[in-house]
Figure 1 (tube, rainbow, N blue to C red):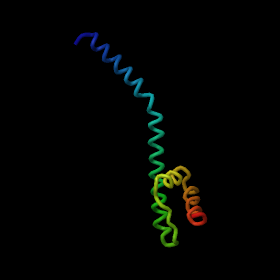
Figure 2 (tube, rainbow, N blue to C red):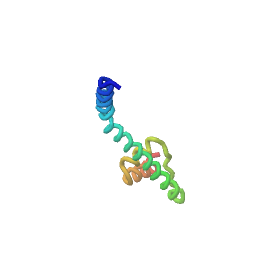
Figure 3 (cartoon, one colour):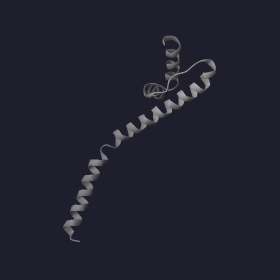
Figure 4 (cartoon, rainbow, N blue to C red):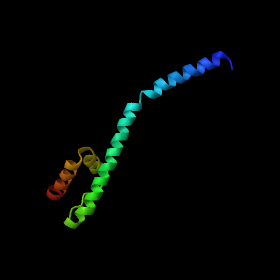
Length: 87
């Protein structure tokens, strides 16, 4: 292999790493958001399992999962209050 090919491959890899390395933080934030939404869906699943005895049922969809995942237990309590008193 000629030195020109090796140098051009190294420079190409450096440029590729510079370009690909920048979107790591937004991808990490998107991944954390997806994990929070999944945890919110688990919160709602357990709420529906336990709340079935008391007549509490909160539907599991993207919006309710996002609210319960981002806000945590207070979000689940807010969804229950909305379900019981408003709807």
